[in-house]
Image (cartoon, rainbow, N blue to C red):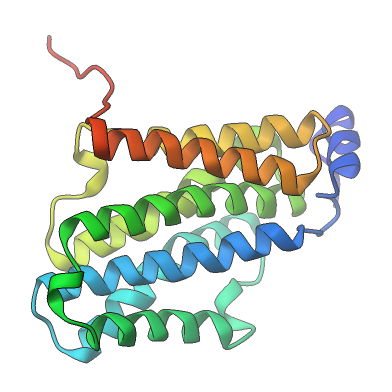
Length: 221
């Protein structure tokens, strides 16, 4: 598998990203993102007062949606088809939400589950794309896709306005985490450190959008 360019290949080798190696901490972030996004899907089903089958469907579609598109685009085996843990996490999240009182699952909880999953998935999506030899800029886009598409699928299934159509920062937070992951890894930072910094930065930006209403200027002409 040819590297995207010589300097990028050298940096990936130094960072432990290439070929096909992903640090355990990034794998942990991936599972955390799956769990949190699946929970956000189940929470939305709870808000809609749906049945258990719908809870499970929303949880699975939200938890694996972005990563499925990413794997198809980078030519990787679709991650959740090779083992049982992923679907187990999604179904476990659905059962947890189903079995607890509805007062626990507010719109605020949905936003924070989504924010944590967004930051974790952005970082892991970039790491996996780089590990499969994807060039840095497309790898950044794979991070954004991994982070955002699950939430888009969730909102479409529920008939809700997509979260990316809100004025508050969302895709921008995913792009920040993804961009930092690319830049820090190519700069030679160990993958666990790059992943931690990128995830934290994405979470801070998305958290600020939730708490403070941070947003980008909108088109007014």
